[in-house]
Image (cartoon, rainbow, N blue to C red; front, side, top):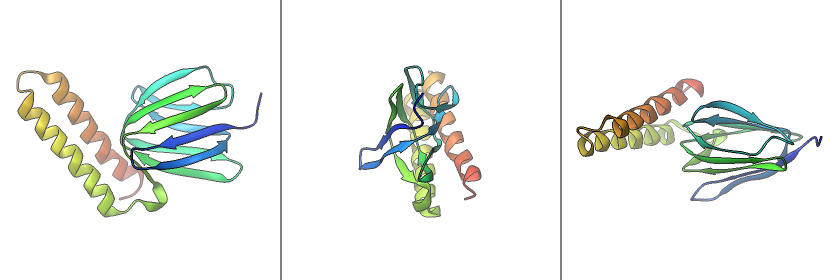
Length: 138
C-alpha cells in the first residue's frame, strides 16, 4: 500500500491543488467520506462543506459549494462548482456564497411552484451553506 496519492482540486476559475496527500476528507452528498491511497473506485457528488487534504506538507482545507469527486486507487480528483482555500475565506466571500444559495432557492420556489423536489434541493443547499459558516466560525 502506498503512503500517498495524487490529489487534484479544480474549479471553473482555476486549479487550486495538485499534490501528494495521505488522505482527503470529502463532504459527499450522501455523507462525509475519506479517500486514501488504494481506495476502491468511486464517483460522488459534493455538498457544500469543507474539503480537507492531509499529507507530508500538512493539512490544506477548501470550502466547496458542490461538484464531483472521482476516487481511484491512484488518487482523487475533485471538480468543484466553486472552491475557496479556507485561508482565503472572508466574511464577504462567505456572505456572497450564502446570498447565491438564497437566490437559487427563491428562483426554485418561483419556477417550481408545484414540484417540491427542486425546491427541497435548493433549500438543502441553502441550509448546507449556512452550516458552513458555523463550521468555519464565520
